[in-house]
Each structure stands twice: as C-alpha cells, then as structure tokens.
Length: 220
Image (tube, rainbow, N blue to C red; front, side):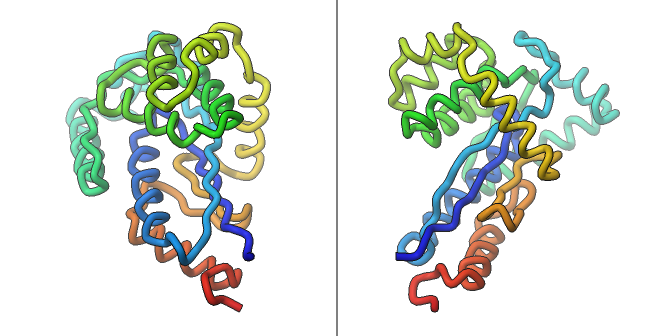
C-alpha cells in the first residue's frame, strides 16, 4: 500500500486566508478520496505573538502593520469575505485581532487526542464567524467541547500553560524552513502551496505531486 501524501497545514487561528485555504484544502481532499491518500496535520504559526490576550482593534492593527487606512481596510475586508463566500464560508467582518498562543497549545493537545482537525474547525468558526476571542479560556473550552474533547481537561491545558515548549519549538521549526506567511501547505516536506488557494488549484497541485510520487491509485 502506498504511503499517503503528508500535508502539514501551517496556519494561525485569526488569519482569514487560513480559513479560506483550509476550506479549499478540505474540498480538494474530498475530491481526491479513493484516488490519492492524504495525511493532514496541523502546525502552529503565530502572526502576532506580541498581541495582548484582550486583543487590539483591527483598524489600529492594520494601520500599524500594513499602513492600511479605513478605506483600504474596508476594501481588504470585502475581498476576504468575497473569497470566503466562494469557498463556502460565511465570514463575519472582523473588528479585533487576538493573541493565539493558547489556541495553539490547545490544538497541540487535540492532536494527541486525535481531534485536531475538529478543534481547528471549531476555533476558526468561533473567531471568523462569531467574532469570539480565541485567547479567552471559555471560548477555548467551548471549542474543545464542540470538537468532541473533554472540556475539563481542555480547561486544565489552558490554565496550566501546557505544551508551550512544544508550540514554540514547532513555530521555530517552520520559520527555520522559510515559512514567513500563512497559510502554508507543505507536502511531504518537499512542496509548498502558499496562500488561500481555491479547491481547484489545490486539487490540481496534489494530483500532480501524487503522479510524480507514484502515489495516485494505479500509479507505478
């Protein structure tokens, strides 16, 4: 039996293009079912590790980081929501950006429990659809429960600061490999799909890689 393509999805919870990219990847994987085996793993990346847990207003953040004024921010937000709609996502208009380190710690634990994908989806929905703060313990615990994880254990992970070293190490590893923006889809540690690509683009790329690897069904 051929080994599956390993896809490391490197992303941050408050990145809207990560939500769009994941939606495209999920659709692409569904289309490849039965033809190209895939192993999907989620990896942490902090776009703004210095942000406070209470967050900052998006308008202030966009101006300081990108020099985007109110008109430019509105244009970017409309573009994001439009691309989200194309990907089947009902993205809310963002108002704040938050620290995501605790969310990444919880995601690391969820990976050990085999529920990482479910928790990732729950966290993305909490922030990008309901505009909740993913640094707040109650938001994290609710997302964990929605993902089928033990809520009490999730609260312990959140309160005790567990898996901090593992998250820091993982972020450094991807940065050392040249990842400086997300989403980044790293396939078998050799190929890279960057940005919030459509399902069509991702599917075509994965098919090409699988053919080169001989991992498509019927490949030599």
